[in-house]
Image 1 (cartoon, rainbow, N blue to C red):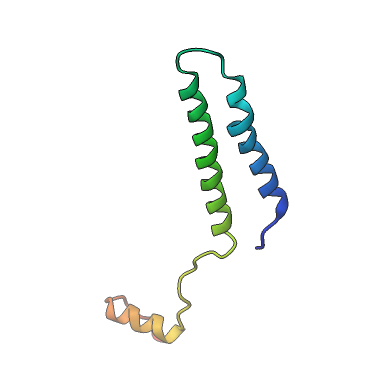
Image 2 (cartoon, rainbow, N blue to C red):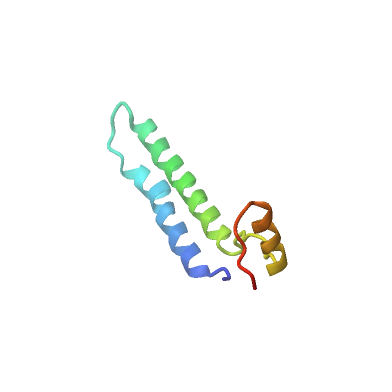
Length: 85
């Protein structure tokens, strides 16, 4: 699986709107600065989390490939019954 530009652009645009555009529409009040900061931090952390998950799928960590001989040896050592082949 390789990288594709379309999901990266779409998610960046989505979280960019949340972090850049939405803070402009927060109503005036005592906590306006806090609400703007919350929106910006939420957008940044959610985008970064999504990007890390997306990139992790490009090169997944898969367990070791064991030969049949190694698997039979492990089964014998762990006390599993091994059928006669």
